[in-house]
Amino acid sequence: MRAASGHLQAAVLQQFGPTRCSRYLGGSPRSVDLGVTFLLAPFGGVTDPGVREVWSKAPRGMRRPAGGLAPGGSWRRDGISWTPTTATVALAAACTDPEQARHWLTWIADHRTSAGSVPEKVLADGQPASAAPLAWSAAAVVIAVDELERGCAG
Image (cartoon, rainbow, N blue to C red):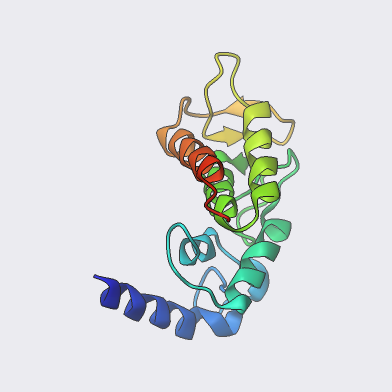
């Protein structure tokens, strides 16, 4: 299993590395995608400093008006923040940058529904929207908090 994972990571880096982990093969580096997150712990084991740098800069291009993230830098500019993306970035940040993880987790907590659940989306004006509760986002939040408490980044 580990060998297959290593081969897959090498192929992804070979194909997407030259465009700084763009959303599509041959795409613009500004179109960085949530997918780069899955190369890092706790998902993958890539320790390449270039990948870490791309990942750390990705939120700049993915940020939306309410402060959350879209799935990619080239995602439609409709103002919507996606909690699955934001929570997944928080989860990876728990293992690489705890301060950033806390920032994203706080943002999610601040944008819950009136019932306290995590919605799928947050509109540009900060209001929760779409499906709630959303299991993917909630699960990523719980795992990120667990990673922070266990010292994943340490």
